[in-house]
Length: 265
Length: 279
Image (cartoon, rainbow over all chains, first blue to last red; front, side):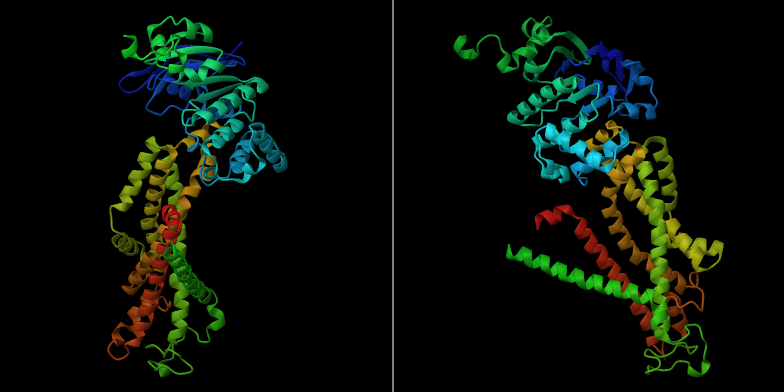
């Protein structure tokens, strides 16, 4: 069963169309990777799903999540959706937290918006969530600037998965991290996905990130999806020339052993 | 390294003095009824223009009223009215600017055109015109000051909110399902407190000057109210014979305005995160 299905999505700016005729389905519990280079409209699609497009952009089409078309919901209806059934992780972990609020206050506010729990229960739930992503309890009282990038990204993952959403949109969550941290974050996401069973819409420009974890891959170019399919099919037998180019540009994914041009010539 | 520490302790020392003096003035203004022995409005023509004595430490004015009593009660009036109008201006301006900045679009444009209309005229002119239209009196003067000053806060808050609302944490808060009001209160408001405090403490001096100067030309506090500006005006005809009558309230105004400015500077430095990190 598909948990999120986007039908003929158009996103129009003032001059040009940013996303054209985009359709995709994310199945329950799968890791769906949306791959494409910068400016291909990946993040815009994600923003349209959350109804967070800038006011000068317009989205047309249908975005079904359960029985609801997200594009037709009123702002108070979409608010109930966001956070509870739809979660989001950003690339910019530093900017994702309000500088004067502690991690605990971030949690608390989020919990109070959606849940009806006592103060103690809220704290316990938040601490459990922190522990589940491999952080210490004392992170709860810290301020965002006291944490490292990897820690912050873990906190945002734990917060995003706190209410067990149906789908988690991860917008290049590892781009701003160093390779070790990003490896850990990906591993953690995959582990938590198995535990909670939520679907992940993983947006990235780097095929290396999806090789190991993704179930299905969609390749985007200039606002349209040019190829969708099972991970192995797309990576090993790309149908489209552009996909092939993308694969060639990720060194560790080259099927031919690495050769220096001048030597092989 | 030594220099840095020295600079910091010097600042702390200055801060202590500043706050002590401020607190003393506020305490004196609040508890004048304990200190004051004379009726500030009681006219006693037999004692007019007396020099300083044990009974009247600063002498008496042209109607035989005790100058020290009037000066102390004047602190209550001048500083009290200043704080009152400042508070009203902040209360109106901050939410106004927040909503305009956060909502953007049409609401913002309408709000800001209103603000521009107020901003088009200099403070003093608006205050004079309003006092002239509504009749002289301290209430109308305060109304005029609030009308003139709230715009500053609305604009300051709006510009801060506009830069902040584009940051990712606001988007994250939205995605987490928070209401606009919740975002403004919890995530944006803390950003504003510092700026608003600094601006308002610098404004307090200007407002006190405005109240006093308009009272001096007879548009603010009316006699026999012991407002400092009004006292200056009362003493004007006796400038040559009893110069001190003008000097006391004048000094009081200078002193309080200077203090509020120092407080403003101090707050500005205290909220300047970059400076704090650098030193």
